[in-house]
Each structure stands twice: as C-alpha cells, then as structure tokens.
Length: 272
Image (tube, rainbow, N blue to C red; front, top):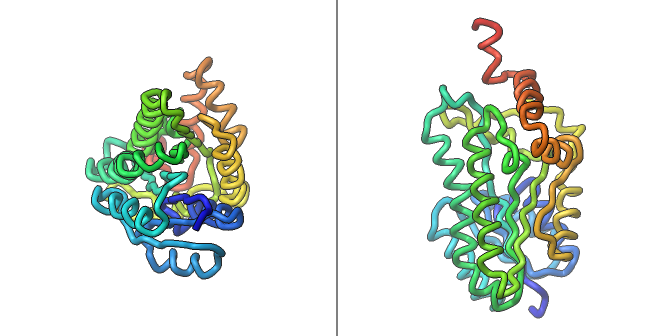
C-alpha cells in the first residue's frame, strides 16, 4: 500500500493497456478505468499488485469524479494521472454530423478536464504528475480528422496552461504525442454518421507498438519531462517541418490521407 498510485483512463486496450502492464511491472498500485469493465477484469487477472478497476465513461463528469473518489478511498493518495482515454473520427467535415465532433471533444478534451479537475488537489499533495496522451493531430491538423485534431489541440493547450499556472507548486505535466501507433483506435474511429469504422485504413504491422509507446511514456514521466513526440517520420520530423514548411506538410498530409483505403476525399477525384 506504500507503493505509488497511478490512474490510467482508457486502460482496457491499446496504449492504456500497455501502460497498465508497464506500471504493474514496476510495482505501482493501479487504478484502471474504462467503459469496457469486462476487459479491465480480464487484464487485472494477468497483472500483479494492488489493482482497482472502475467502469467509467470519461465524457461524464460524475464518472470522472467517481474514479478519483474510489482511488482515494482505496489508496489514500494519487501520484500520477494518465489521461489516455480517447476516440477518433474519420470523415470529411462537410459530410460529418456535428454530434460526432461533439462526442470526440467530450471524450478526449472534457474527459481530460474532468479527471484532472478532481485529481489535481491530491496530485499537488504528492508532487505528482498529470499526463495527457494527445497525438500528432494535436500539433498538425489532419484532414478527415477535424474533430480529433481539435480535441487534441485543446488538450495540449489546457495542459500547457495548467503547467504554467502551477509553476510555483512544481506540478509536473507531461504532454505525450504519439505518431501512428498500432492500436485499435482507428478500428473504433467514428464515421460521418457516428457509427464505428470497424477497420483500420493503415498497415498496423509497420507501426510502433503500444508496448514500445508505453515504455517511452513511462520513462518520460519518471524523468518529469514536459513534452515528448513519438515516432520519427510521422512524428518528430513532421512536427519540426510544420514549423518551417507548413504548406509542404499540409500537402503531404492531404496526399497521404487521400491514398488511404476508403478515403473520405477520394470521391472528389473519382467523380463518384
């Protein structure tokens, strides 16, 4: 019970699951939150240590408060909050129902705000860390992902401002921006009408794994870094070039998204 306590949202799959495995190996007490409670329970059976699983939808403020309250009831403190829960979308803005953008913003941005709001007093007491898992889409606007990019830009702005606001309290805030990582986020991405995409338009085998991503994020939290960008070509290089050659990056991004199977922009060029 004297071990440090980490809360991970969206812990039932992808980067969140990989982070849960990593922190379990390092002897942390875990608070794992996700909508898929059954997957959390299955994951708990594979992990070691003291683990609290919480069924929660981070787009609901009271669910976020419950995560924090249960963590304090169980462990008495919080050392790290990792805001990982998120959803994506893939559709041309002109064809996309605005409810899709709202849903993405509610989960990605407001979920981060709600969890951080209730965890902050406890993390200040422990001189702990608040982590936001954003995306390259939080640095570069991605076509076909307008709502996703907006939510990730908003997360980055919120967390950067929070870090500055609490400089005198030495609050550690890490903004982690993975590039394209092999996970199920693209399979669950929302389409123009809000239904799940159900497939990935990319070659997941060539991407960084969620486990590799978790290793880097764990190290960055330990070293109390303020910002990291993961992967090289579609991550660090793209962010760097966007500062100096934004039009080039926009063209490359558009052409890349255009070539995806089932691209929402393909009909412009096929006449269909």
